[in-house]
Image (cartoon, rainbow, N blue to C red; front, side, top):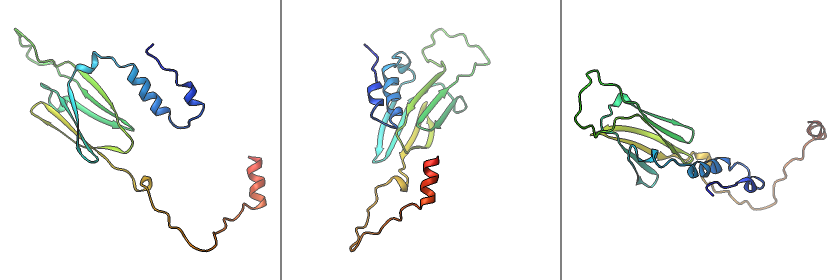
Length: 160
């Protein structure tokens, strides 16, 4: 059994469909595609990460990095050599690739560099001010009353 049934979770949760899609995608992983190109993911700070991919033989204009919503897509498209060399052995793979990474909320790509055949993509978690925890002051005295909706507003809400 390689598939999980998440339908019982949908009955009692709201807004977790991204999580179930992630788990579903993880169960359908093609292990052959995971081998090329090899990569490392390292934590470089409290909220900083670096993705390093070995892309030997690819030039800067043959690589493309796209960040959209919570997905990082790294694509390599090798251009044909104009002079077709006659290789006796070709051990450096220059086949095209497409590698997707799921990013957590508030992860942003802040830079990328190609050094000695290694593609480095720097990421950082930037939590917006509105999503950070905030302290609520506790007042003294009588609680403030929130005004009740007017009778006209109640009628409009019921009609809708």
